[in-house]
Image (cartoon, rainbow, N blue to C red; front, side, top):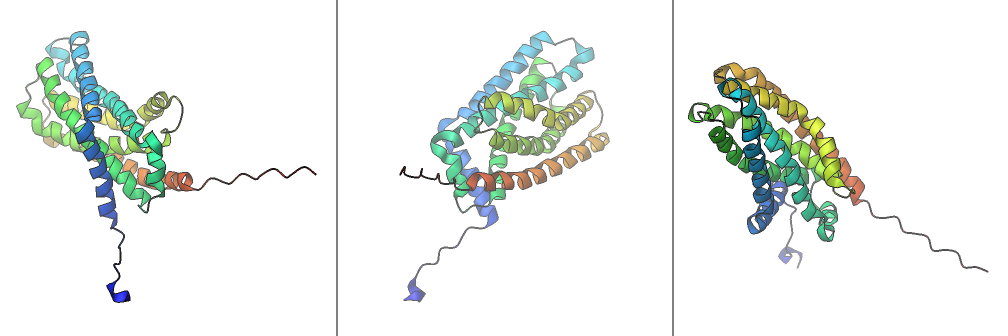
Length: 250
């Protein structure tokens, strides 16, 4: 009877976002290609910069702050390219967009996955930079973690949106870098400024303006990403218009 039929309920929004995040994490745990490649590339940038830009104690804080976030920015582009390559294979992105999952949940799940990958890269880059540039890490560790926590969400949201928009384009890695870096500039410049001040000995309590500015960027980029990704998903989910068969010749 009808009472014995199983009613399948659609999972809630948070559950949908969690499923997308869990999928990306499970794939990464199996392949380890995004974090390994991005972390290696970021570490290489730090090592090269330590030999090329190390100018002594006078410029240590300034150079170290720039090196940290420059390596994070370039590794983010590499991580995006590897992550969205998975979605291009066998039309996985099309299947994801036509599935009964909220477009905003897809965006948030993908952005959380990228933020997690970037956070792991940052945990490798910061100690390596401190070692190579002779920075005393323990006194500034808490402040650096706060800067990372405020700067990563906006970076991940912007990267996820434009990674999806360029997923099918030719020369997508080049286009992604050209489009993404100008949009990341406000977040990166603010993070560099906060990191420079912190490494120069400025107390954490005096960096409030930097954190407020990073918070504003996070809200703008996350909210804008949710809105624009929904529009992108709707346009990609539209079925293809059938072609008209040519009329027979009489």
